[in-house]
Image 1 (spheres, rainbow, N blue to C red):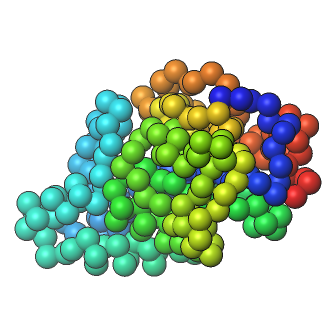
Image 2 (image 1 turned 135 degrees about the horizontal axis):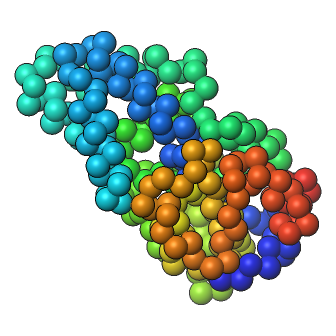
Length: 247
């Protein structure tokens, strides 16, 4: 993996953005969901919270919607996930559900016409509900069950060294060929196996590194910054060829 980032060209780079704890304030999403659950059902949200914390502490994936559906069925509740989802999305759409400076980063990328998309790990129903609630469904996005996103990016690389970004992540739904990828994520494990030509930036969330997937050893060559504001500063520096300024 080459980290000579000053070779980055604004006209041939694609930004891959993680959602949870990078763009989206995951804790806040869960807080609102728990509020809705307690208002709409007889279920105590603390049980959902405990199950999530236990899974995350063990570095496991926790499918919030799958767990909630099972919980609703087992409790005999007349409510469905679809009903709770509608109330949840309506409740948060006028709230700021993003991490600090995440909106600024998205605005910069859009204003400077730098192609970008979101790859988010988790259960599809929950991830899409959060994206809709955060008003980000208009940003090209893919939900994946592959936690080590380096494997996904390796699959994009051609023998020539260029990358083909899949249609699902482009605004015109056509494959896009670029020479480099800039990849932002909060979890160390997401960067495992990233190929040469991918410039990784691990974004530490404001609450620090709390999850096992964040605390794992960060692969060499990946930049480590505190929050999206620092990522913007890095991308606007000589080290990254002032890519956010020159576009």
